[in-house]
Amino acid sequence: TNLFGWQIQPERVTVQGEIENALKQITGEEIRITGCGRTDAGVHALAQVASFDYKESLPPDRLQIALNSVLPRSIFIKSIEEVSDSFDAKRDAASKLYRYRIIRGRSPLRRGTAWEYHYPLNISRMRAAADLLVGTHDYAALCEVDDSRSSLTLDSIDIREEGDEIVIEVRGKSFLYKMVRRIVGVMTECGRGKIEPEIIPQLFSRTKPVQTITAPANGLVLVEVLYPKEE
Image (tube, rainbow, N blue to C red):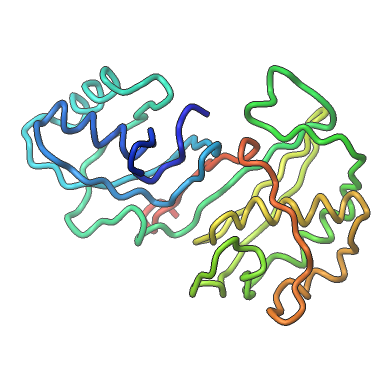
């Protein structure tokens, strides 16, 4: 909430920038870290993964304690472990799980981590849209910028109700810029009755894109990143 996303930016407070500053404070060296993905400003992460080269003698558990002692309280290092020299947090990721939370109405206590939605939503229509979005497709219409990786595979989209919340979980190997938030936007438009689920395939045609909305960043969280040895 208090940061401008993951990626380091000039004159912006970011997760990557704060961790690299902490590493320099502890080691005296410039250490560049590689995150498994670039979460946007306002998007949270329960399990972001990053890798870096480290040659000091401080063991991982002591380095974790040292980092958490100097990092701002908006960032917490859950664990540090040694990996092979060839490991790359971004390149080696096998799948990522994102979760999006929608509140049906208002909640002052939860509004920082969920989308307050004020229109009725039909879950069956949202699930019908989800079924059509899953698979290997050209997701260019669900990306805010041009990206050569537009043909990707979505493994699954699960939707469930928890009290006054709708929870959407999206799993895949990689995602385009703001892709998950646009997926949520499409499904809410279907759930609200603004568009029919049957026109979802038009999203995969660059000649006849369907108008989409982008869900707010605050409802999205990176929940899990899996690597081959963990599957």
